[in-house]
Image (cartoon, rainbow, N blue to C red; front, side):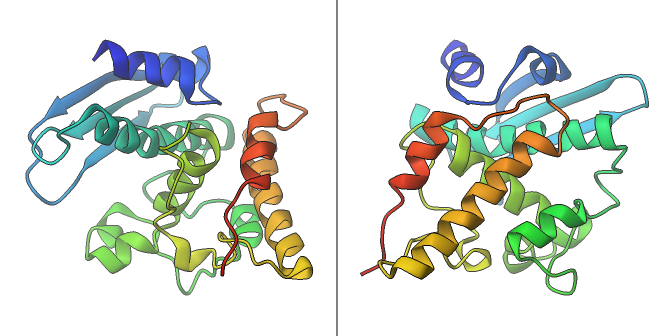
Amino acid sequence: MESLSDFVEQELRLSSPIELAWLDVIEIRDLGLNTNGDWYGRYDGQTFKARIRLNSLVLGTIEQLQRTLAHEYGHHWTLSYLAVHHNLRIYKERLPRTYYKIRGLSEEHCVYTPEQSRASYEDWMRCDKEIIAEDYRVLFSPHPHNQDHRMVGNLPLIRLSTHPSIREQALNIWRSIQNLFYTVFNLGISHPDDRVEEYIRNLPTTP
């Protein structure tokens, strides 16, 4: 557990004392065979409390635990700020339209409530809360935990084309998503993280 706490506090690039204080506990327990982990948060208008659970039944190594934790912390980071700063009812409302527009998502395609996303694996893959959590993991967790975005179908340019115009379009999409993380959550961060820029530059190209 100490190594997981260090991973959150020292290696996830946007973690700060603010949202760390909102995270009550990280539990490792048997959650059955249908999930790697989950996050739950609650805002009462004054305080935000959350917990992350990691599934000991299917996550057998520290690397697997860290990768899942990076995704679940993506939920914590994005949804806690949206609840506190933007009054988003995180289990009942879609993510901001700004995110949908930058990400190229459509309301017709995406689901947004826990009940919808649990209906099937395909529905989970098109849940806006899952997509933004994966965006956080890929953009802000260290190698190798930032690899293989699972919603690749929702961002077909994630593997950059060698064609200059398509490559630049892909870079612009990633920069826009990155900028969203720095601006929509009212963090007062005025410049992008150099490590994210390095990640963007090193995204693999398609054959």
